[in-house]
Length: 75
Image (cartoon, rainbow, N blue to C red; front, side, top):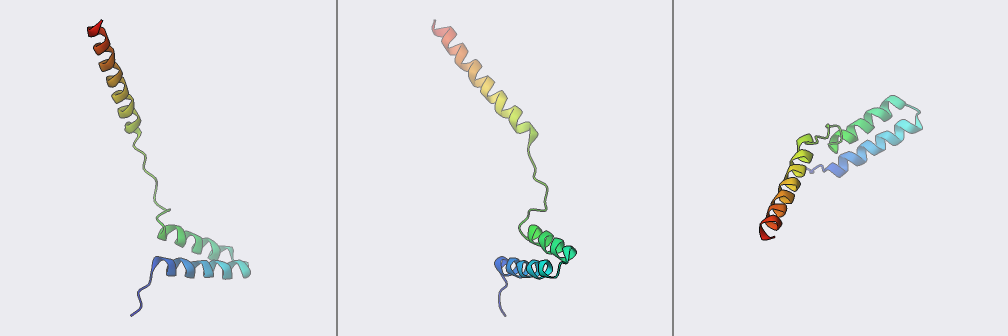
């Protein structure tokens, strides 16, 4: 049995897209394009941790406060 790779599947879908374009079949073209995107994981929403920016900002502020206290005590 031959192992099918991701590249094999993507190549087959590209051939399907080429045929769809030659035959002026936009539905088949869209279907093949969406199948490629799905195989590549591009159909999933990209998650962004909105709280990460706040955590980074808080860490920077804490570091700055810590540095201010060190300079205050040494004066």
